[in-house]
Length: 103
Image (cartoon, rainbow, N blue to C red; front, side, top):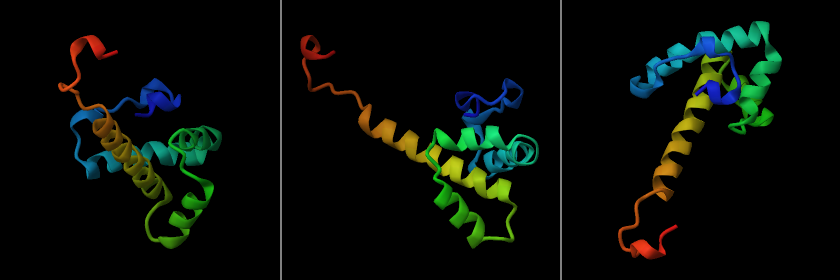
């Protein structure tokens, strides 16, 4: 996931089979690192999944007890889940279309 946002490949994680909470736990330290040391990269990371500044501010303001990195991880993971569901919804195979008419 992070590679598609242009984040350094040293942040490779086994995303394919991790449960949601483990993904959050794996992403949070990486996001915290970006928060502390490379805020520009974090902003770029949030740009592609279209995490708006207003949504980010509202999320962070609503829950001051949870670390910011964990909250950002939730925003990114929720976006990714929606993206996967949308792709699955619109990429179903259409066996009812004759083979010669498919693109």
